[in-house]
Length: 87
Image 1: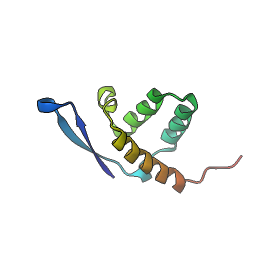
Image 2: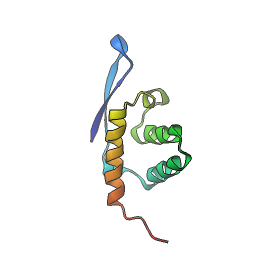
Image 3: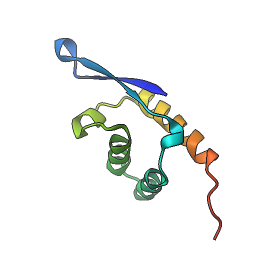
Image 4: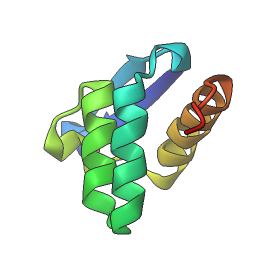
């Protein structure tokens, strides 16, 4: 999946394509998202996504809701493909 991010505005805008395969999402990342959801706060979720995509803090703060939904859909597909162990 390729998501294009545009960072900055006007003449300073820079577009960068980030390519990631949902199959390469690690269990550690899913664990980080699970923990972030437990907090009900955006920062841990943004931090986990920034780490996954190799984005800086400033770049990750510019993720749009459209891009967030695309990333979320890829994560959902990947997590459904994983079988979660039962205790």
